[in-house]
Amino acid sequence: MSGTTYKFNKNYIVVVLLVINSICVSGQYEERYRALKLTLGGGYGYYFNTFTNVLDEDVRNSRLSFYGKLMWQPEHRLRIGFESGNYEIYSTTRIETLSKIQKLTTSLNVIPLFLSFSVKTTKHLVLNFATGAAIMNYEVIVDKSEKNRIEGKTFSLSNFTSGFTLYIPLGNRFELGSEFKYLFIGKTHDSHVSAFLNLSYKIVNREIK
Image (cartoon, rainbow, N blue to C red; front, side):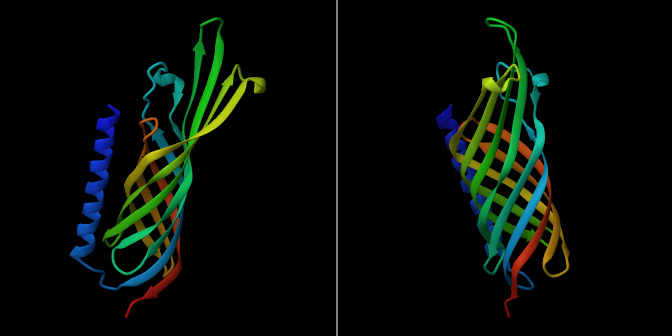
């Protein structure tokens, strides 16, 4: 199963990169710019429950997410940069009856450390893809007692996001947009979709004559 998933993820990444490349070479902007853009966004995400021992009603899978990315646009349609943030993936509460009734609360949040690519396809539409490592922070609390709290972190190396951004310019340097993305965590095979409202600022914005 893991081998099949690895091949699927590898093929998916190759296809996305080929699409980005074909769009980049197919045309250029009417006006070309070199730009360094900072984007900050926040919104809600939805986790697709993959637990086999937790019912859907015991999973809180709609949670807040935040992200930021710094993108460099050298000339044409393609941009490259770095992306990170904090995705609250899920929290769960369930009753265990092995020896006694216990209230077990767990939560997971993910901090991506991604190399990010984007390409402008139309005047107000940008396709996005990012891949890299992720820090996974988890917490387990038994009977809501601080004495029974377990916290830890682990790393996932095979992860990616893909999606698109719709935006409108607010003057020469600011942009207001909405971004929709799919996040895949390779270590646990978790899937997460999210919708963000974001604000971008062009730190550098130079027209190429």
